[in-house]
Image 1 (cartoon, rainbow, N blue to C red):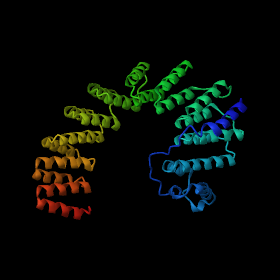
Image 2: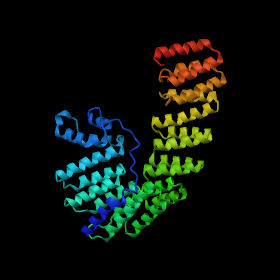
Image 3: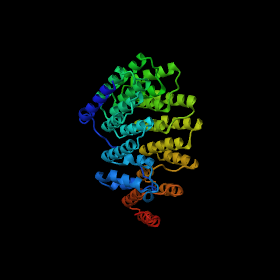
Image 4: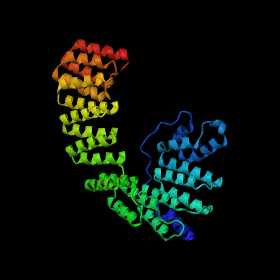
Length: 418
């Protein structure tokens, strides 16, 4: 069986993977540690020099006193897919040369292959282990399946599962089924996701919190909202406490369907049971109410947040939404009341765009004296952006208020805004 497994994997590595998946670099960009200049150096180097540079860093540590494997991992998201692959290849070569026998080290390396969506490299790690006499385990197969699904190579993932089924030494376990459920959930294939959930239950494994997180998020991603509701009912029947991720996804489902009453009741329920809502949940509700001009509902949400003793961050988030809504409706009195409520809490505007919406409201109402007072109050806690100054200059110039225009220009010069 070991020979059959090895032969299949080598064949897949040569033929199957190269045409079935797309290497996709991380989209996020992280700031790299100023203590270790190597990650920044890797960003600038051509791919052909990546491995030799890493060799030099480990061979002459005095030239790179802060070098560490962890610093390299931190820079992976900022590297191109090819450079990230070379870094992981270099690590594998070092492990094999040092006769590394720790399974966890290889598992970790394969998980990194999944993160950079490079299934062929994960396959290379797997086959290299076999060549060096390290026997496969169920966990290693699971990690390889995860890398394949992360790379959208479902065919190889399914073939690997068949190998596990026919083996004696690395049979599928609970984690195997979970990997397929998570993978197909991420891919938005709810039919396959549900099939693997059924297969997991047939195999005698119970659903876990992670299982339900994947099922609910997969349904929401595919806009199968009724399916998400059914899984939530199932969660409640099992007595499992829903996670924040599940709650956020359910709220997103209600929001997308514009079920305002359900949104309101769901928020109240979350506050009663869990005593808090997340920032993401608050953003979802605020965005929904803003989109549909639900002023009263927004004020009610703010009252709920205040009464439940939520964090100041949530108060600021909801109140900012209220200010934007009143400004869009040109309800200046309500805008000023909401701004005053915010300032009394020792808070300030979250962004320049919010300030500018309020300024536009003043210009629309031609309430220039009140605008002066507003600017005087917020300058104590908020530095005006260049875009805000530009708006004031344009507004005063259009209104023919030369004195106020001169004052704004002088203020720009004093604050160094250009």
